Image 1 (cartoon, rainbow, N blue to C red):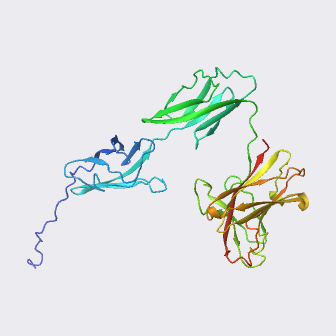
Image 2: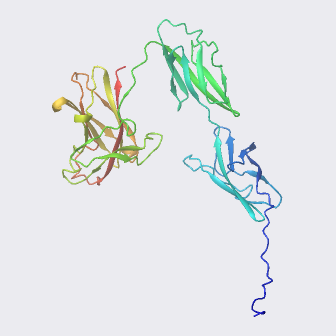
Image 3: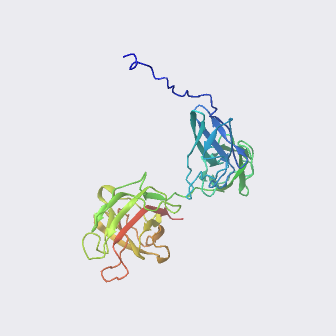
Length: 359
């Protein structure tokens, strides 16, 4: 019994928690990152236009620490579409480890508001232009714009300064060593009426009724790009066979009834529509008044040069039309397909339906 109760004299190795697992500095292309020890994150802002792929950070660690990915190892902080990537760095030392979430971005600064008196300017963030319309007779040689912009950016001319707008004026933001320029134009007269958004798949999304097809309302945009970045669109399957579900030339969708429109051709001159399909051919918009009266058929050719891409098509409202437009029918491939050897059944999409006022 004494033998069986003897103690095992093998000892477990002790754990050493004295290792330093902090990142002491994180530098990318000469720019030092901001380290937040409370949430173990690091942010680095590089000059505007910097390539965020294959960057090689220089990292300072405590004695004996090892980091993965290694210091000077090329790392992508964005994908090839420009989307930012969060990268996790793990530091180990003795029996401790710590993970850091690292985000590398480029400097971005915007003018967010531009006002003269009570009039707001129209800011185009893509093209970095601002247009503001003021009443006829305004003295544009000594105007005082009030400008809001990204916090921390230095603006020239300053907000509240007197500016001569006889010619377009460049306003410059200096932010983290990068310059962002906006061209500001003052125009005397009444601002043009904006385009009327009839459908955009997001904040303006009436329900399309089926016309000899099965309508997919709120369909995921198959190609989100600079031409059409909205998240959803409308889609039908356009079949080759002569059937009542996607096989007729007039297969498509309609806005009428509950979702009818009210467009006065005395005020509007054209309609635009985004279309994406895998075959060239005519796209037709039919415009009607209530009760399916006063019909006009507008056709525009979807080009073979950009098959599989969003194309913006412009439909001219007949100058002779006086009847109000209440119904809009879209047939995205109005050509006969039964004898078209080059046509195969495929999904066809449309989006961004707008009406434009007369100039």
